[in-house]
Length: 378
Ligand code: ADP
Image (cartoon, rainbow, N blue to C red; front, top):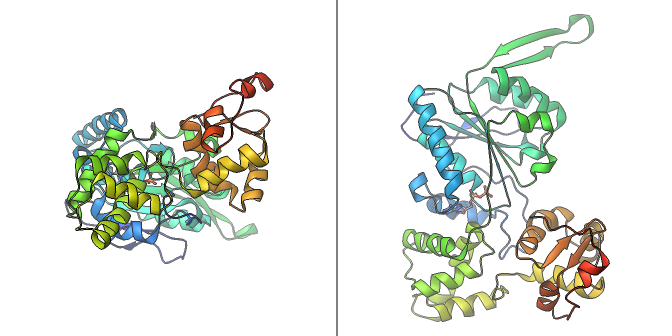
């Protein structure tokens, strides 16, 4: 595959056709969620606009300074030696910029990016097909890497460590093991659930980074940058209002910006001010601190139906008629981050602040008194 001076994106699926060269954005790997208004999982609309808004270089990437600095050094060193970059694991909640970093790495390495996801690599043949088609220094990006089957995962061990795969063809007396050498490549794994990765797989990543939620100042920059690209007029406090309500997540900030832009165009003269942002987002069901309907429903259910908890996440999911995975990956991490809920040994509990937000007054020491062993996870 000739190098073009910018990353080429290759979609690799489980359809057995092998990877096909495609210079558009890759297909989303994440499942859509019920409350799409501000959930950080990808929608089709995000994919369409995502390409234009995605930072192309590290200089354009807002925030996550320590991660970006460390990766930039590793990328520069590998490029200078003309080596493949060490394998990279990126973990953190959805919508924080993991895929974007993978794209930037490929671009900075002047390499091709092959994009696939854990659930798409169903059979060992899929993984062997993808690996054997990689060129030297190519980047293989596996989204939702925690969802790889163990059979597929085992092929990755020798591929990552020794750049070879061993596979068996035929059966019984005709079985033959073939040792296939691979080109040195870089695997970039992305996951919202690093705890679900097996130790042998995790240990094979030389560079491991956690992406954290963005602060208001950083998200204001994200909104201003996106507004410029979309040619939307926005005041600084208009951008800050969107940033405050974006749950610390750039993907949500971009999505809310598009909703506010529509509102500003239809109801006003198109310029986004603080007042317009506030009114438009209220209409979207996003409250002052950025919680959406599902976040509030979760809090209210825990505070009222379960009396502040403890309640198991499976019970909450059943009550809310929502996927447990959506609660664990999307709703809970942010509520934990802002100190509205606690994850204790017995289950989830609201904190006094969380209960207050749900409209319930809770004894400030109640959660600590009843469960001295409670822990607060991020
Ligand atoms: P993830 O892979 O973690 O789910 P993505 O990399 O797909 O998240 O990011 C979602 C969107 O948010 C991107 O399309 C991009 O426009 C925007 N984005 C993410 N991180 C940043 C950042 N640091 N600076 C500017 N925009 C960002």
